[in-house]
Length: 245
Image (tube, rainbow, N blue to C red; front, side, top):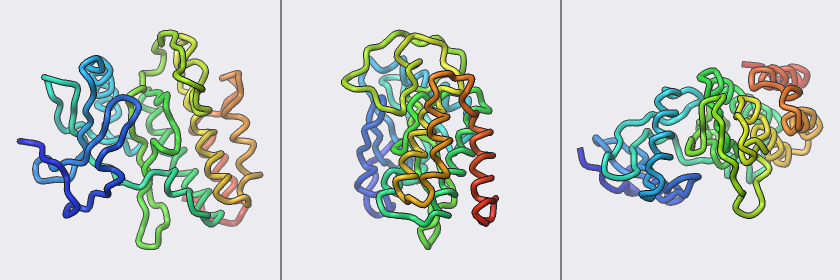
């Protein structure tokens, strides 16, 4: 089945029609009559793409991750389900209610817990790599963790790398130091997301600060897991009298 470019008639936003990610560029296309996402890379990225497809197949949709629909044998490219167009960083650009901030934090923690349950370390977790589903009132109903170009199975030994420019705060130092990646490596990215959420509404900043600090702890053994972080966020909701789901 041929892949054709997406158009406005299928509800694809211009922002998502050409999205640069960690490895390659994502385009909105029509595949088998459905709006999907096509990720294309350079020839030198073929091995990286194969690793990404392998990880995504291992996840099988966990954490709201896209599902791989087709791969291209000639070049680094694959088609996957389209998980929406609203990234978490865009969602947080306007001030949100405290209850909304805590809810979206819980949704991300829950999605990360699902990814980790599959034994996968994302390695590039940040607000731009999370898509948010919202209802008619703009309230978050679910999230999708995306862009697994740098993801690896837990316990993978990474090569020593030199960061291009200054390394983002969401990257765990293990990513560059040639160490074995663990699930706790992603908690630094989770802390970065919680920091973005805290900036969206100062009323939740103090509540989230302990989790932010913990996720950035140099000692991985001191960091909470995604499951433990989710439990803490549920407790924050309960203390503030909000319904916990």
